[in-house]
Length: 350
Image (cartoon, rainbow, N blue to C red; front, side):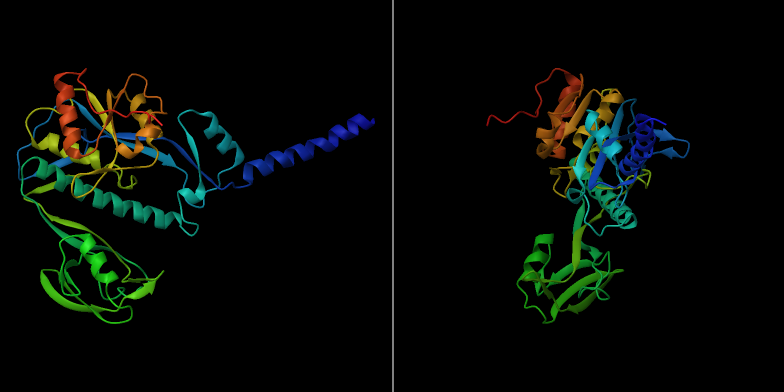
């Protein structure tokens, strides 16, 4: 056997080893790919995705698309081939792992949090849509999460309505933050909550964390709606980024006329209780997903405009949506005139 043949024989297992290492060695990245879209105005075998009990509804043949992103899960093995493929594909992205997940986050924790955010997003979006449609909606501050091992554990429960904290009336989440931050750590703090229709006086002693007193809770908003509105979206879709599209779909269903003009509309963005549209992750991938579904217009959160301008929308129009109200105005004007001058994302002059 010649020296060249021996070298070739030895190189084969080395090459196989290198390929195996590239395949199985995890890299500290997360990949983003365009996900599925869901028409919130559609109907399945089980009925309409958006259902209303107690009020007249209005339907048309347009589509209002919720857009999603396929994101590699926490602790998933992302290898060199996957990273390179995502880098090459214009519609995909590669993001450092630490920019997306905490080091200790498990897949189960990620799914649970995503489901909680989705539920909260739907409730807030429905409330905002009803207010835009002229209905009265009462709002309260509630406990949305209790941290394990923190002072509030075993005292406060998810769903408790916070009426008073430290003698202060609670009308916003900031009221809770201010009252707890001003309280001495280690000393009992009086709270008044409503649970199951009863008012309960409670006490919790804040613990100092990073120099600030904490109870170990997260707060959100609860709403007293005049009638029932439900969104039957696949529970596997998590997060709060569909808030804007939820709100627009609910408004379109409850009011005469059409926000879509019979066309395919898409978009993304979180929505707070005041109707402000907030940023999301994976805007470029969501734009790609909507483009491939034939959407004519895509609503973009203001803070995502810079990244959106780097995406490929083809002939789909990108419209900046500061609030639910401004998005409604843009859609109504666009239905009347597809060439109307609407808020748009612009490149910085710097």
